[in-house]
Image 1 (spheres, rainbow, N blue to C red):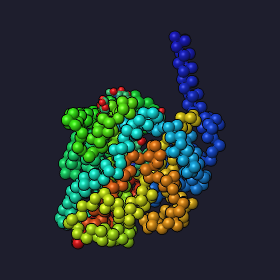
Image 2: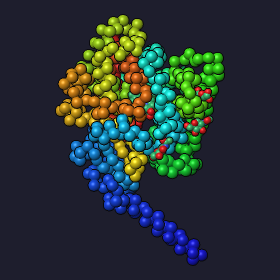
Image 3: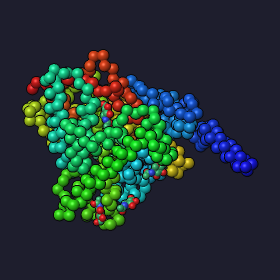
Image 4: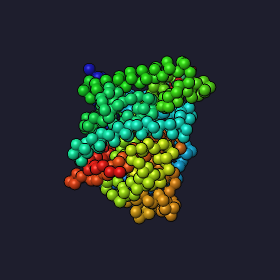
Length: 495
Ligand code: HEM
Ligand SMILES: *[C@@H]1O[C@H](CO)[C@@H](O)[C@H](O)[C@H]1NC(C)=O
Ligand SMILES: *[C@@H]1O[C@H](CO)[C@@H](O)[C@H](O)[C@H]1NC(C)=O
Ligand SMILES: *[C@@H]1O[C@H](CO)[C@@H](O)[C@H](O)[C@H]1NC(C)=O
Ligand SMILES: *[C@@H]1O[C@H](CO)[C@@H](O)[C@H](O)[C@H]1NC(C)=O
């Protein structure tokens, strides 16, 4: 009895000691990062997390203030005061992207891993090297250009739906659900020839995916998904949120399995004719030596990988692009002029890959949107070679640095991309919406043509204006989205 009490007391003391060490001693007196300047911790449990997740209406995240105040390498405190590096220095970023890529792994991956599995996005080291090498040929120019007709087809459905609303006399339109569904339908088709048809009907995979990623983010939900990164067991607690999560995972698993099996059956009779990424991967796999192949499980995991990596990113980019064009009517007019000139006949506007990419101003508008509102404003890594230090790469801080972009760094100005002198300091190490190197976005060409077709066709057909009295804020966490929603006043371009 005595022994047990003694044991428990020691245990409790041990835990308390460890917690005090982790939260109050290690970060400030021992961590190799302790001397790096940065904002003081606001709270021992949440560190600087609260400031980081505060909604902002401007373009500026708290990190930008820190970079201005403390320099291009900032240390702040994460959960439980964990020292975290925020880096906006292109030399250091170069070391992480181009040379020592595999020393820096992705942290915070438990929840996403449970759904996506180890596809390209979550693979590390040799496994990633093999998958990436195998998948690269699926994303070449000749394959991506075949995707344009699918993007045009879905955009035409969207165009019809918006036109109907306007013709029914409704001009103030909430575009958030429309763009969310459009981009989901698009990645379904080009990713794995799956017709979500979410613009026009409901669908079980869309619902499952929605329930995992897109439920209103309650505090409990955020807490559980954050905690699951450290303690996977919290996913087993039988609360409603976890049950829904499990159900959704089961549906995703079943549908992905069915999709790959159908493709395999088809593939028995020779090369697959489909232009979707899944078909391309199966065809490529057949031509490779055994050690370079990917197996069935890995292929199945690419389905969710494409959805997670390719849906929300293009969704929010198009949302911000329209928001910015509505805020800047002159720029919207310039873009429409370019489109009208290239495609005088509105009813016969089915751009090809090359046609849409030849539009100079559309290209500037897309680049400028991704500069001011990169869907991934910070890239997170853990340094395996250095005490597992969490590192945040400050993409958005670089995108708004006056040292690189001059005094108008935080202004929307698509034309800057046409003026060599105003972009003379821009490189792929300080402008990187798609990151770069071996872990950069594999789908950037897909994303750009998708966004341009969607944007080009919408601006050719409609005029977008702000709704009076609707104030659209910029949510910064977990992804930068327009809040409360993207509402715009829409009218039809007559000819
Ligand atoms: C505007 C749209 C997009 C943006 C801004 C974007 C950005 C990024 C970024 C920054 C990364 C690196 C993330 C990290 O390492 O932490 C990434 C990776 C990735 N993206 Fe994209 N992406 C977009 C669209 C897409 C699309 C449409 C697809 C699929 C067709 C896609 C597939 C992927 C994949 C598979 C990875 C993992 C690559 C690897 O680790 O080797 N992305 N993306
Ligand atoms: C998940 O992240 C941890 C680092 O936090 C890393 O050690 C592990 O390899 C990652 N897992 C995968 C599959 O990427
Ligand atoms: C798409 O963007 C809108 C914001 O305009 C957001 O409300 C919606 O949740 C996004 N959908 C996805 C799947 O990210
Ligand atoms: C790749 O080829 C191997 C061996 O032929 C096969 O077992 C595997 O299922 C194939 N993987 C894919 C994704 O087609
Ligand atoms: C597929 O490869 C992964 C390694 O990436 C391995 O863990 C898994 O067991 C393999 N699955 C099958 C069915 O061979």
